[in-house]
Length: 449
Image (tube, rainbow, N blue to C red; front, side, top):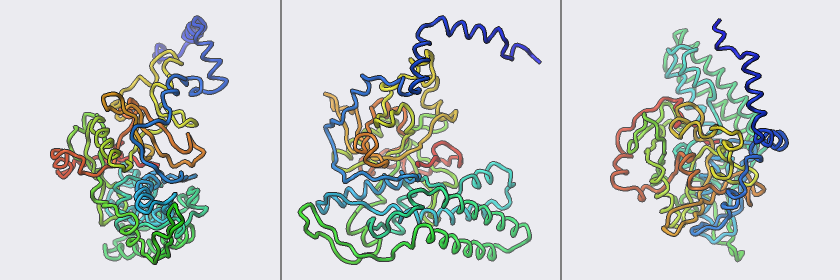
């Protein structure tokens, strides 16, 4: 044994002596041990810069709450859609059902998973690919492209047409038992293949399995409506929309959003992802016939440019970020200047990795999706602070709103979704080019929850 690699009594004595020699360590110890790391690292001047005053702002309905589920990407997507309905009909507020796309996302993800299992029946069970597929087959999380696929196929419904249930508010048990069932399906399919079952018979097994998935979801979430009655009243209590609609008819009439016009832009400055190139992620998706995701990688300044352009046109912006970084959650503040972790500990902790290194070394990825609904500008028209609608209810942050500073955007915003009309001709061409395929476990394949 090389004793130079061991922690010795002398090492401990020296560390204890160095710690005691600096009075700032005692102050930090007393503060952190009493109130916790982030409250002790809170910078009041940074917090003060995050007031809810904006130069450009869209006016949204009442806050929504994803509760104990990982549906932020659905809530963010539906919030961008409901805004159009509120604006079109001059409503006080309005909410689209989040249980409705949840049902079909679980259904489609189950089918997607079984397809991947059949596609990898000859791969080793303990290999990285099959182990990855089995790890979390029907996660609550998702991407904008996956939501677009769901809505194009199934439409949307008002919240009253498919309200929340105990299992949509808290998806843990539903996910647990559906995951167990699907892993059992994977075993049956792989063993049947090994026993010589024909591809046609395997496909029939898959169909039968999907019938049982439907049954499980209907028991947990209720049966999704094929049609429903609608009565929408405006701010003056006047009926502005009434009738019977299918989900796709309601999407067309009440939302009127050209889903195919909206594209995903990412910002990942790693060596393997050059800016100006198009990317996709192997085996990431939900609706089998609609394919996988597609991203265009651009610098943060371009993401901000197009987001600002869409806000100027009075439309909110879906975005994905690593929400827990430099975040004062209770106050709803995402700002690198509002939390001084490195100053608290006296050495580089947050500052030990840059953005590319955080992605490469597993420290950061997209974890949460929300909606940009406002921006503060400096004298030159550049953004300094962004208003964010979260999906954690009105009791979170400031009436359900967060703020994120422009430097925080540079570091931790990884994706925005905008109308492709805001892209340059060169960017649109790059988006349509043959995509580079990323591995299933690449950080750009992470799902917002």
